[in-house]
Length: 443
Image (cartoon, helix red, strand yellow):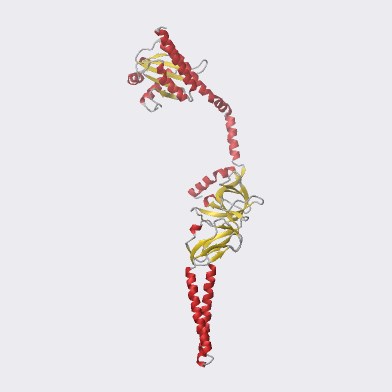
């Protein structure tokens, strides 16, 4: 095979490879990169650029993305305005441009340029591929460039057709009358009545739970139940430390025994000596006083064992939070709840408050099972807001679950949607912005 024939085979294989690369390109930008950089496999040139109609200079050889603010790209854009008017390709030199464009040519590009329009048969021109080099372009080079240009134009047109259907629909559908109808429908939709609703964090809490408070001012010694454990009436819940109370009871017992013995001796002596009759009354009073103190300490000892007043489940955090802790009289330790009597506690931030009425519907979306919401009705709305555990000022709302629904476990949390009265869709959508504007402007 001759050298000329071998070169033709090599050129044909490169042309096939470039065609395959263009067909596999995922975006028009990738085709532009191939056109300005990989065409060098087939033809020798120093610089290349791609100008697309509606986008301007979209690719320049040697850089990933052209900077439209650079002087070189701006000079190319001015030149392309002239080159894009050509229906056929050809060569171009600085002599084709007047004034400043011609003088700047030697600064930015080699002397000879090949101008190749990108267009398909019976279609508008998509763009222009420009290649610069020092040597003049031959007729064989231009013929090969025209073949390359048809491949690149086909790739750009294929990507344009993907969006052509939507552009046609948008062009035809969004006529003046259609736009007017859409605007009228959009304005009318703002007056469509919808039910006002807000969302707030919620928690399942026991209803009418019995609060177990500390009867003593002392230290908790041990817990006999675990959180969420079921208990029966009379079951031991926890015990206080008995050390100080036992010592006080022992002292009170000894003091009572001494007072009782003194009273007994005075009573016996008064039988034979009238002088001791006057001491019987004060010593009896002292003995009764010490008996009361002894009875009081005995009652305190009995209170060291706290038992469940009724059946239910005990609700508290952790045993370790209480064991060894000094509690005061009346301090809340735990609650005993009936698992079949629960309610929903909602903390509604003040910023989200709307006009509520009792018996309004609510819907709970549990964090553990958001796909199966639970319905209920609003039962209580606090008059004043208060600080929530998360530090947000919020109203306390309580709701009952719908009859016949499966009651959730105490302690579960989620998001509650509270429904109010019906309002227009416009007010529903712009309530928060309107509130912010009114607070800002004071009207």
